[in-house]
Length: 130
Image (cartoon, rainbow, N blue to C red; front, side, top):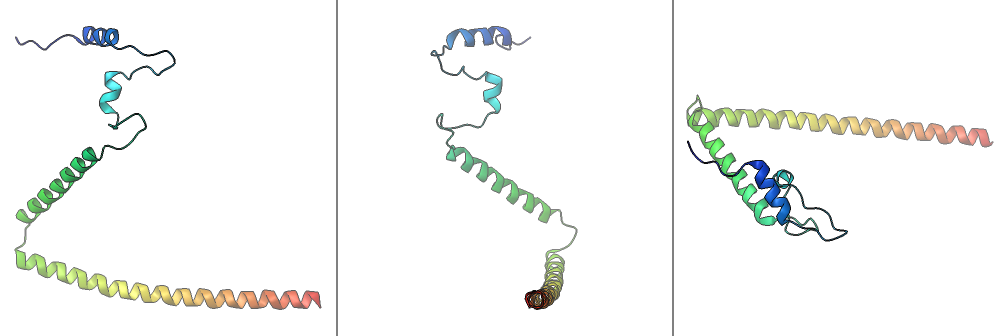
């Protein structure tokens, strides 16, 4: 049987007896709350950039390892994958060009319609004033 250390109850009472707070100040956080709270460099809530950099490095490493694993387990050869990616890119370019052309046409139609409505509104206002 192995020794797991002091029980939680005795550890909490030891911690509570060691920490003191000044009158009017906040009480210290419990160990459970501080374990999940974001780490700050001081009480003003500044970000610990070293931890942010460590998280970013871990994220980048995970993305690289995931991409490498995906390439190693891909069902196609490299040449087939490159050809499929090229064909997909060409399709996206063509459809993007069509959609952008349609968007410009729709914008032109909307502007013409707004211009017509403005002219009609001005004409009606002149007729009412006259």
